[in-house]
Length: 128
Image (cartoon, rainbow, N blue to C red):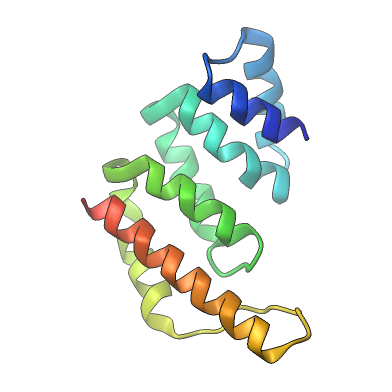
């Protein structure tokens, strides 16, 4: 809940100093909290956070849950995310299915297709 609130605040007027500290604290936690706060960090800090985000977010591309959350942040970064285009291209070209455990082959295929579409859309925004 805190990442969603901080993201909303970052996009609607910005964060106070204390909220920014909370955002940074959450961003230091590996996993879902880290990915979920990446967008707010980009909104609040902008290009000064680019290197940190580019180091982190591509690690999550092959994760079916985290990757879907990382791609919109990379897309929002636009040309600032160009250094990861090669990794994104390899991910798109790999044809590798994500390690999903939805339990339904059709649903897993749809999830893979949605992830691929999101990766292609992010690539297009990044490349301009």
